[in-house]
Length: 96
Image (cartoon, rainbow, N blue to C red; front, side):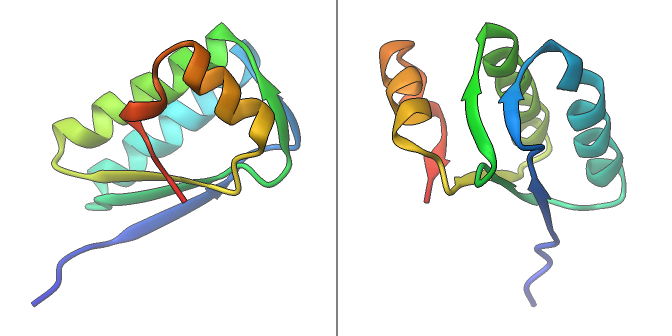
């Protein structure tokens, strides 16, 4: 029997940075507590991210993996993929 529960988050349009830290982290924490173990962050509206945004993603990933979960990033634009590559974190995430 498959016990995977999925949460999908459409990230706010624009820029992922410091102001988004608590909201995204708190949503992930709440969903983990509710038994969600598969997460998808939809980057459709996201145009860029800064170091705080990278920190948010890494923090969410750490919490998800600590609970034997999976994190996927979808609709990631080329600019953000390049940021991931340059900061050498592209291998940390499953990018669809």
